[in-house]
Amino acid sequence: MRLKSHIFVSSLLRRAFLLGGYAAVLRKGAQEAGAIFIRQRTRLGTETLFAPAPQNFFADEVDIGRKFEVRLRDSDAERVEAALASEIRFDPDCWIVEIELDDHGDLFEVVPQDGASRP
Image 1 (tube, rainbow, N blue to C red):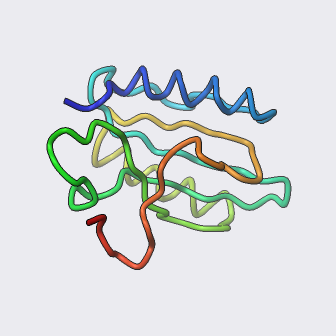
Image 2 (image 1 turned 90 degrees about the vertical axis):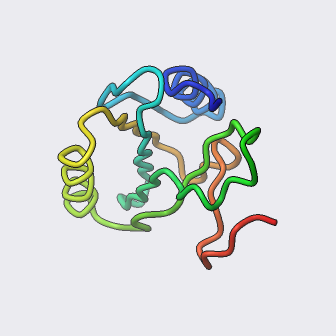
């Protein structure tokens, strides 16, 4: 059983504020198991969009964390908006969280971009 979406989002918001950043829920999704998309804005005006990682990145059934993959990196706001609009059409129960930090640090786990899954 994975950590409920609303609990993960609440924790993410608090931790972002503790790091001196800003965070907000742009779209509230299903409380139990809604997919979570994270929109990270930097001071440079670029954005990175993180989406839920595919299931093959989860080691086994007891892995209750949430993992993310980079969907768009250092992109402009219009591309991120278009990608999120597409995701909302596909899954209207998704969450969209915005954070304003130059480095997300260990706020959430990001899987490797080379496609390798964890052993």
